[in-house]
Structure formats: structure tokens, C-alpha cells
Image 1 (tube, rainbow, N blue to C red):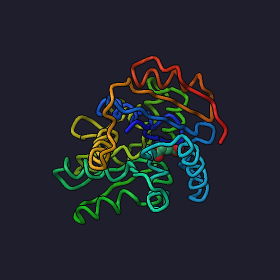
Image 2 (image 1 turned 90 degrees about the horizontal axis):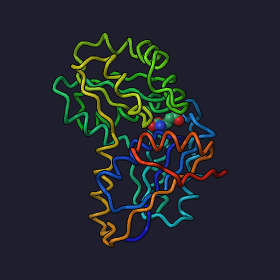
Image 3 (image 1 turned 120 degrees about the horizontal axis):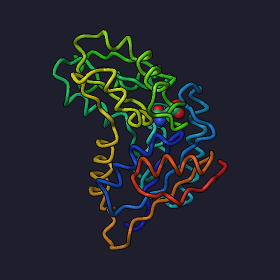
Image 4 (image 1 turned 30 degrees about the vertical axis):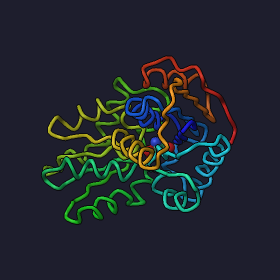
Length: 265
Ligand code: DGL
């Protein structure tokens, strides 16, 4: 079907999901909205995250999207259920795909989850993991220092390493944990440093890959996959600075991204 997929995040984090969509669904077009101006969502109250997410969704509905991907764990934790009830297009979040991948991977049944304060306080991962397998032991930790680093593009070097090392200290002491879920779509951009700090015995799960697989399955099941031969079209909208967004997007998506537009929601 010749309509784009809508992708939303509080900023650049959802690009980690967008890159998997491009890889797994190379014929599909998408429109991405990042609410960079109001990022981070993590420390905000639920009502505010619901309002801001609703504004991004309304913007995308006016663009006639065929499906919505909430490429933000905080927004998924707070709004997925409501949006699924309200909208008449399929809505996919990032929590269930990540939880499923972690359950598939763990051998010790002890799984770590890192995310924003909002995601961790909501216990959305713990509930989802235990719904699949109630024996799973979950070690969760909020990492409020990570998103600002990523939004500023400071993803390497000693400032990033120190913040990650100091924050993850409590998780490093848990001996039986063998799997760590990156419960925030910004974190894959600092995944190498997280792996270095946690050590090679820990498998790191990023939900982008699983989420894109779910999008693909749903579009195929609903017969909404694009079957034409036009090149895909990618459009990016940010409530923040288009140039910073462009730089991060071009680096992360490994191609020159020019169509970035500034909007007010
Ligand atoms: N990337 C988002 C997430 O997955 C939100 C980060 C933030 O805005 O705090 O939770």
C-alpha cells in the first residue's frame, strides 16, 4: 500500500528503530517525528508524555500514515494501550519486542533492563517479561544521564564512558544476569560503551530489530506491504534544531539525510 509508516520518538532515539525498518523493509517509506525540543520525556509525568505523544500522532495522522511505530519506550509504556484503542491503524511499541528477544536469549532467567525514569518506574518491562515467563528475575535501573549525551551527539570519549561506568555499577555486581535490555531507543547509540562496561558475558538486546520484524509481520498479515517499484521516501521532522538532527541521522542511518524539517507541535 502506497502510504508511509509513521515513527515517533522524543528525539533522535527512534532512529535506531528507523534504521532497522530501512534494512528489513527496504521498499517502505516512513515519516519520522522527533520531539527534540521537549526531550527528555523520561523525567516527565505521564500526563505530559501522553499529551506530547498525542500531538506527534495527530501530526502523522494528517499525513495519512498506514501504521504507527512508537519508537520510544517511555511513550510506549504510557500510551500504547490507549493509542491501540483509539486509532484505526495498527500501532506497534518497542517494549514487547525487546522483552521477547530477552526471554529467547537468557539461560539464567535473570534479565537486566535499563531505561528512562519513566519507563523503569512504570514497571512496563517487568510486567511484560513476567507475563511471558513468571520465573524471570528482573533487575531494572534508570539511567537519566544517557539520553542528554546522545541528543548532544556525545556518544564516544571519556564523558560518555564515565557516565555509563558510574551508572551501571550496581548492575555489574549481579552475577547471574546474562542479558541486558536497552529499554530506551537512544541507548543503541552508546551500545559499544555499554558492552565494554558490562563485559562480553552479557548479551545486549536492542529492541529495534525485533520491532521492525513485528512491523513487517503485521503489514504482511494486513496486506499493507508496498508492492510497487517506487524508491522509498524518508521524511524527518523535529521540534528542535534540524542541523543537529541531520548530523545524527546521517551518521546513524549511514547515508546523507537532507529532508529534515523543523516543526512546532
Ligand atoms: N528514546 C526514548 C525511550 O525509548 C525516550 C528518551 C527520553 O526522552 O527520555 O524511552
